[in-house]
Image 1 (cartoon, one colour):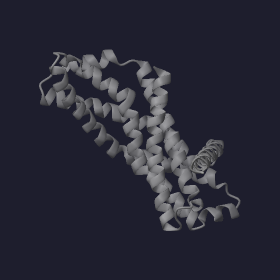
Image 2 (cartoon, helix red, strand yellow):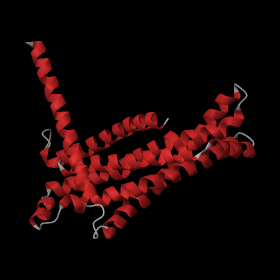
Image 3 (cartoon, one colour):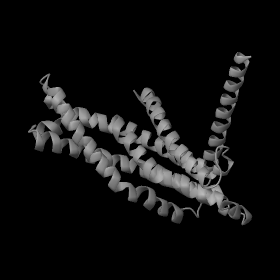
Image 4 (tube, rainbow, N blue to C red):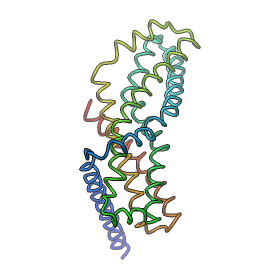
Length: 262
C-alpha cells in the first residue's frame, strides 16, 4: 500500500512537471510571435529603461566588488606558488565565462524579475488582463513580448558592463592595494581572452534573459491558478516562485551551456 502511494505521488509530481514545462514552452512561443510586431517599439523602449538602464547601478556595484574580491583571494592564493602574474588571466576568464553572465542574471532577477512577476500578478488579480481580452487585445503580446525583447537586449549589455567593471575591480585590489605590477595584470587580461570566451558569455546572457523573463511573467500571468494561496498571498507566492525558479534554472542552464561550449 505504501509503495503504491509512493508511486502515485511520484506520478503526480512528474505529470505536474511535464504540464508546467509544456505550458511554459507554449507561453514562450506565443511571446516570441509578437516580438516583431510593428506596435512594439514604444513598449520595448519603456522596458529597456526599466529592466536595463535602471539595473546599471546594481550590476556595476556588484561587478566592482566581485572583481575586487577575486583580486584579493587570487593574490593570496597564487602567492603561495609564486604565480601572482596569472591574476589578470584568471580574473578575466572567471568573469567573462562564468561570473559575469550568472551574477548579472541573478541581480536582474532580484530587481526586475520580481517586479515583473508582481506587476503582472496584480494585473491578473485585479482583472486588468481580463479587460484586455474583452477589448480583443493579446495580453501576452502586450505584457510579455516587450519585456522579453528588452531582456534579450539588456542582459548581454549589462553582462559586458559587469565584466568591464569586474576587471577594473580586480585591477584596483591587486595593483593599487597589493602592489602587483599593472602591466603584468593587463598583459594577462589581453593574452588570455579570446572571441570564443566573449561569445560564450553573451550566449549565456541571452539564454538567461529568456529564462528570467519567461519564468517571471509566466508566474505572474497564471497567479490566479495557484492552489496554495488566493488574492495578495498568491501574488507574493508567485513572486517568490519566480525568483527561486529563475535562479535555479540560471545555474542549470549555465552548466548545460558550459558543457556544450567547452
